[in-house]
Image 1 (cartoon, rainbow, N blue to C red):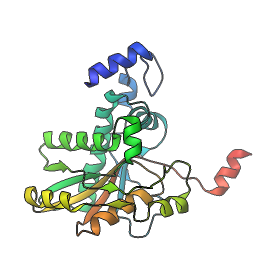
Image 2 (tube, one colour):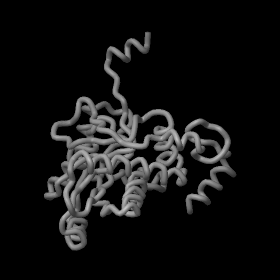
Image 3 (cartoon, one colour):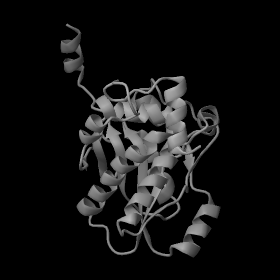
Length: 243
């Protein structure tokens, strides 16, 4: 289904409203679109997992950015792929600028989704926006590719509701990089730089596991790029808010 048909279906069945401000109209009104970030920034989790490469995000996982991610991932609003891909592309550009990536192709590798989640939702949203970001950057003259090199092992639980330690335990050894993907990559792109892509970074456990899986087969990861980063609050801030 094309973005236009998907949006038309949403307007007919759900009623057209902007995911950001909830005003009647398209999925993302001109005002909310204009307010989207125009550049990304370093956004490491705190505390960050040991050995995590630099992390970049277009903004905080809040407000319109949060609704964009949820709208695509949970509600399959396909018209949101383009703005999300644009935000991820900003993170890739910032990563390239900040880490000094050299010559050769840049390969964007999406964090893999659990197969059960993809079947249930009918969409791998992270792969979709990573593919879109690569296409957008190529149109601007950059040698950026997209390859789904990673897979999840069976038995990985949904991360929602897990704290940092539980996420780490759930993910240890959970992501692999099959040899078939490496062979294909070697034939098509003999020299490349690798960037791991995700929609949101929270504790960094998933990104670190994806980084480990790539590095375990000799592929060096330069950065983690995401649409948004959660803003973790200290226990003191949480207690003050509850008062």
